[in-house]
Amino acid sequence: MYDGQEFHRDNRWCLSRRALLTGAGAVGAAGLLSACGAGDSSTGQEAATVGSVLTSTADVPVGGGTVSGGVLVVQPEAGTFKAYDATCPHQGVRVGAPRDGVITCPAHNSTFAVSDGSRRGGPATRGLTEIPITVDGTTITRA
Image (cartoon, one colour):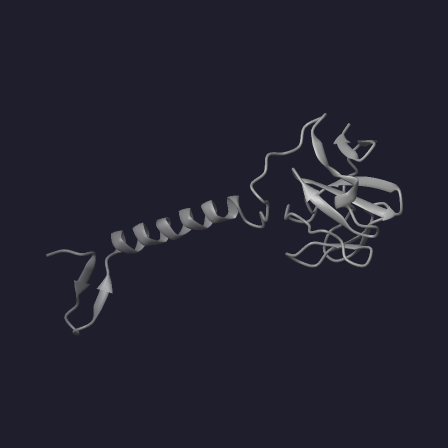
């Protein structure tokens, strides 16, 4: 029976060249497939389109925020709402809601300011991209 291994005269098992190359190809393919989703910490929600309701003002704490449809909505100071693309510019990982006025990427700890999305530190080389929004009463919508 041939299972990709050969028995050598010095009583050691080894892989044939074909088995070795087939295994290496499978490992490479698995690596490529896993890289396609690497860093994606999305919630499975569809990306918010223009006119999509993102959240309610009541769900966005002062100094904090919430992620909805790939958009991070924040309230840097009472009554002021801003939104940023929730994708970290470093490697595309979804950032989390801010804590203590700082937005942090969970993958490599890049940090961004809640007030304007600017880069504060980490491997990201630029800040978060601002997303236009409208606030109508208590409803925050992507503009």
